[in-house]
Image (cartoon, rainbow, N blue to C red; front, top):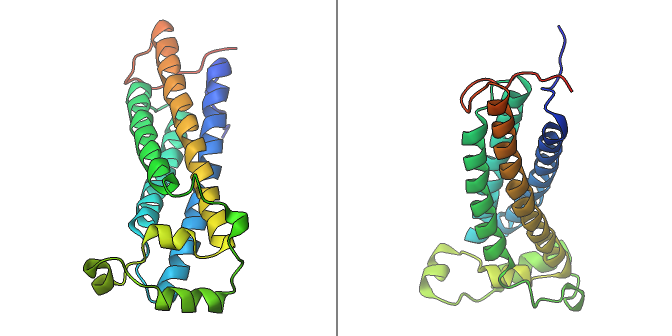
Length: 200
């Protein structure tokens, strides 16, 4: 059995590169978000909704990225629908980047002291909540979380950076899918037909 990706020129190579970069960025976001959520739950607090939302979007996106590339590799990808879906994920990535980046733009991580795990646990256990709802649910506010210690600050800024990168990647992949769709149509295919191999 011979495995070979569709030969769709530079746009096909670009699509493959975009999907590889998206996968790597999403796995990084999932890993860091999961680690931070675990730290908060270990301290018997509910993680900020911004972290939960980031993890949800990242997990959904990585499943989508893997499935669409498998379909592309097997010449079964509906390119126009994929372009639309990439556009929707672009919007979701913009929302995530905006929410998690709001308190970070003016935050200097280097000025925050480094804290040990025990220090963080004690900090989160004694933190005061700004409203009654937070006190009842034990939800840690996001601004408090990002300023807890230097390591957490750098981790969340890394997530923010990858979220911004994902905005760019999904914008490019959406445009590439439109280009591939036009090329397949010009060669005699359609937006819903299987992607066919084209010689160099």
